[in-house]
Amino acid sequence: MILYEFEAKRILEEVGIPTEASVLVSEEDAGRLRELASRVPGPYVVKAQLRQWGRGKAGLVRFADTLDEVERIARGMLGLEWGGERVRYVLVSERVRVLRELYLSMMVVGSPPGVLLLASGAGGVEVEERARGELLAIRIDPFEGLRDYMVRRAAKHLGLQADQLAPLLKGMYRALWEYSLLLLELNPLAVTDRGLVAIDRKAVADEDSGNPKLSEFLSRYEGELGDLQREARRWGFAAVPLDGEIAVVGNGAGLTMAALDAVADAGGRPGLFLDLGGGASADRVKAALKLALSQPRIRRVLVNVLGGITRCDEVARGLVEALREAGRSGVKVVVRLSGFMEEEGRRILEEAGLKPCGTLEEAVAEVVS
Image (cartoon, rainbow, N blue to C red; front, top):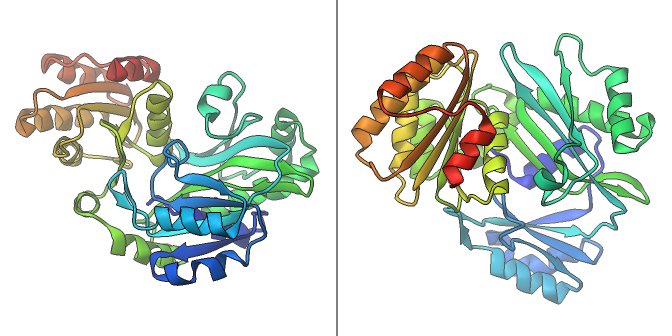
């Protein structure tokens, strides 16, 4: 479940991570928009709240200097349809004076699961391009937890003091487990004259965790689901419609998001985020691919699977059956398989006339070509 930014902001505040002053305005609150916005010090940032990414490039994050501008921009956003999703909320925030933008994220990866910490001194909208070659990755063993030497290493990489960064990293790590998050990203994390401030954030939660702390978020999410997402939930995977024509399918929120970002970075336009989760059977993979292929705007599909709990041969069988039954021969399907039962998976695909790619970079280049 992709959380709204305002939900992720609330989690950060619960664990003591500084954020900017802001107020949430819903469609129902539109008549009180000016009154609510006046509680925030100007100048302002007005941000459409969506359960998908790429809103900045779509003009759905706007600056405003006056309350008149805030009102005009926010009214223009509320009720707007973008990427198959309705803008039900906008977040009106103070525009923080940023000295430097950083990037930090934590995601649950692998089997058995661990936590991957990513840090870069290049945050912001084009982080994938600007951070290339200087992204620090630290694997955290859940049995050991976040260690002091990891904090020192990340702080040095970001040009910070360890005591500046330690409370924030410890808060992120705490939030990851307390709220059953699969991904928590601060981008950008702003260096300001009053310290570090998380001025934008993304979070993906495990909706099947049974965590009572997610109950309010889950209730809101289920009330907003479209037909595509309801069908995805029936099969046990997560689907988020986007605005492009490339479906990105993976196993794990972090892995799928990384592939989605790579597609966008290469000039492609993602049209669907589809996370199979762990241990996907052939039937579940088949259902996922048929769901992706049922969307008329989807012209290409990238499948990126790292086998662990998920077997590559099961993925391959599901793919082949879905393509056989879907009847959309004009859709380009690109597959990258790596890990458990990879050789058998590749054999199944090749016998069906599909040549799997060896790396994500190769697969992305192929799907956007």
